[in-house]
Amino acid sequence: MVIKGDVLVTFRKSALPDNLQVGSDIMIIEKFISSIEAWLSDEPLDTNEIFLRIMKMVFAEKILIGNVDLLKILTENFEFSETQKWVLYDELVEI
Image (cartoon, rainbow, N blue to C red; front, side, top):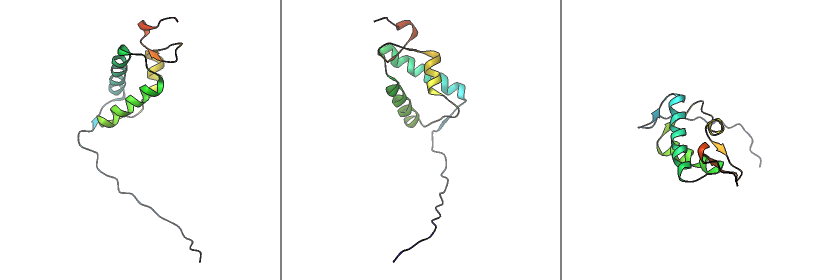
């Protein structure tokens, strides 16, 4: 026996969660830059680690982001070292 047919799936849009942080793209970018600066002042980090920490922050703090390009934030505000890690501009050391 063969059963064929179409499946229609509908979703109900849920309400926005409580404590959702909604801000301008510029405000979110500044928050990300500040956090990345703090992390890099402790130690150089690779791209995956920075992306992971940003995503943890977004989910933990319930941040709604719009047109924010994390890779652009990294390339315009930080330096990629020869060790394949992001550092603050003033901490770039030739190895």
